Amino acid sequence: MRLIALAAALLAATFATPLHSAEPSAALIERLRTEAPPERPIARPGTMWKVSLAALALSAAADALSSYGKRELNPVLSSRDGRFGGRGIAIKTLVTGSAIAGQWFLVRRAPETGRLAAIANFGMAGVFTAASVHNLRNGRQPAAILPPPQPAARP
Image (cartoon, rainbow, N blue to C red; front, side, top):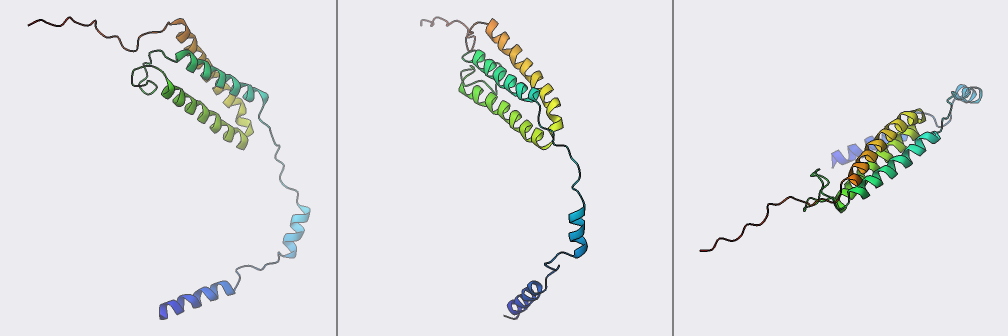
């Protein structure tokens, strides 16, 4: 009981005396009136970054569509039968979407990084475009190359 009474007394004493006064000092008020905020130019992300986002999204979609139903060598993207399907599309969409979302937060916080993000986006778009051209040049391939069936041995 004594411990509870002591804790209550300490809490009452703590909140009874304010750490600072509620009203600002006259010097602070005068300083806020006379000083101008620091100059920081607000740069908006350029058009090139926005165009690069569109190029990245379109090339990723073209790569996914050109791969659909074909044999996939990447085990992360392939389904159980070894083909590129819904699982691969979901993973590719997740990776591309997270790259775009990360860049959006970065460029929003520091607009001067838009140029570097645009260069990265055009680079990734080039890789995705090369992959989709490669996929379109190759026809549909079987999911797995199996040996021909052997005739059953007769007893």
